[in-house]
Length: 243
Image (cartoon, rainbow, N blue to C red; front, side, top):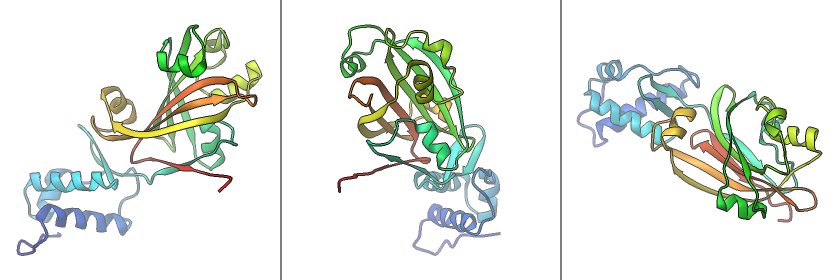
C-alpha cells in the first residue's frame, strides 16, 4: 500500500499521479492494460476518490493513460510517428504496414458531399464523393480519415473499394492513378461526439488533424484528404529533402 505524505508541499493528487507513473515505469502494466478503479486507488493511497480522479486527469493530460467513460482508465500506447514527405506515395496505410505495424480499416460510409473547400482544391464544379474510414493501428483506433474525390473522375469507386485495402492501391489498380502529397496543413482541435465514439476518447480530448491535397505525378489534383488522429497516438514528422 502506497500512502501519500500529507505533510509534503507536493499536492496530494500529484503524489498519487507520481506513484501510478512510477508503477507504469516499473513495467507492472503493459500498454492497453486497465488500471485499478478509482475506489481501489483511493484506498491504496489513503485519499478521496476526487483526488484520484484529479490524478488520473493529470496522467491523461500527459499522455500516459487514457480514460473511457464507463470502462475505466488504461495504460496508453506510445504514439506512432508518421513521416510526411512530398516525394513519398500518399498511402498512409501502406506506410504504417511497411513500418511493421498491423493495420486494419473499416469503411464507415461513402456519400455525396460537395464541400465548397474540397471543390475549390480539386478545381471542379462537379459532384464529390466522400469516403469516411476508421483506421486501427496495432488494434487501437488511430485515425478517422475523410477523402473527397470527383465522382465523374472515379465512377463506381464504391464497388471497387470497400476499405479493406488502401485507397491508394484501389485507385492504382482500377483507374491507373498514382498519388503523391502536394500540401498538408496540421492543427489540433477537441474531439466531437462522432470523433470520440470512433476513436474511443472522451469528448473534448485533443485530436491532431492533417488536411491536404493529393496530386498525380503531373500535378493534377486528385483527392482532398483529412486525417483526424488521436492526440495520444499520432505524431507527424515533416521531412525536408532539400534542407
